[in-house]
Length: 458
Image (cartoon, rainbow, N blue to C red; front, top):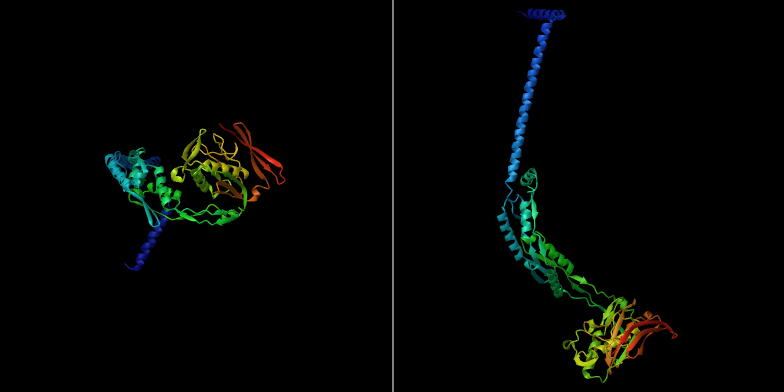
């Protein structure tokens, strides 16, 4: 067959197809339509049933997987009911998966190691060692063991599973009771041995000449900072595995007194003298010794003076000698007889400087070197002479003995007197004396009168 025949067949088929499309479709009967509909519905229902069955199987499989997973999580968590959870550390020591007995053994070893540790403190070329066992009062072993063993046990098992298998690490340290008193004692020892105190500037007064003696800065460690470092080191992770080394640097200790303030001290504002000649050699030595101990005292504004603090202890080893003293109205020999004459002379110089005492006591028996009401006794631990510098200028006390007499001078700036003159006055009636402090202006007029106290003698 040639190509023309092929073309004729193709054209014939196309025409027949077009003819068929133009012919009207055959109408179906009612029964045929119902049958066709039923077939379609059955096909749809079969497909829906097949889908539902597939979905139901998927749900069953999912539920089975879920419960299997829950079971795995539950029993995995229950495995650790009597064990420490993984990734638990005590001072970086792994205590994971230990039972209670082995955990306690591990804790005992750690406590023993910690107690053997040393804290070394280096201060330049000096080195001090403190044993950790000396400054730890107690390590609460049971509390730490209970905290480690019970960690996570109170949570829902799913949370427990997460803590166990999600690598949630946790660090523990001992709850230690530290002996702060021992630490402070150790730090004070180091401070005392390493510190060079500042030398305060002061005055040197010879007759009428006032000379300033310069001070010098000191050096020392910071006690508070060192104390905190020791406590921090004990509470650190390091104490569980190694000895601690702390290095301290010296800090400059500045003098508290400014030389510029001392320049203001120019004038003698009061003086008082009493006589002791002929009262005994030893008594004279005691007076000179006590005078030397208060001589050179510098009181900055607001500073308090304590006579007992300056001259004590009144014992033979402190430069005193046996001499007569008044005890309950009678004389007897004791170390330091005569120190009360120094306090009495000081008291009179104090009043003449316009300074009122904080504490003062009279003798039980009247004395010969001042009238009643103007004396001041000392009884260690019970009776003292105390006063404060009330002025805005420094006050310098000069005390010396010469020719059988003791003299006490107060030096400051004449501005503190403001042109006034102070005079102590005692009104005596029998064994009772009432003491006042009078003040006069430049014209000699009485402008001030203050009651001091009442003295009663035997």
